[in-house]
Image (cartoon, rainbow, N blue to C red; front, top):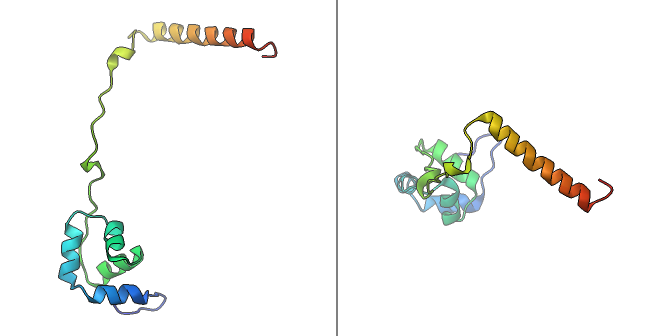
Length: 109
């Protein structure tokens, strides 16, 4: 990792990365971990990983976030009426009831 004008390297990260070859780092990047996870594993700053990838012409693809996500199924039975006018009337009546109850509870509405 050459020191270009305007960039500062943490000496700890340079010493840590000297223990690994670019092929080792590429294998770690391909393992599916994120760059931040790899930085934590090596105990070096995140920015050092980015600079190392650029300096050694390595490739990195971001891991999928939805690897362990579960698909949420929505219950369409919540919608009672398909007619928009009927749905509006129902919502209007509910809001009117809430407003009336609030007025009865609080005299200074």
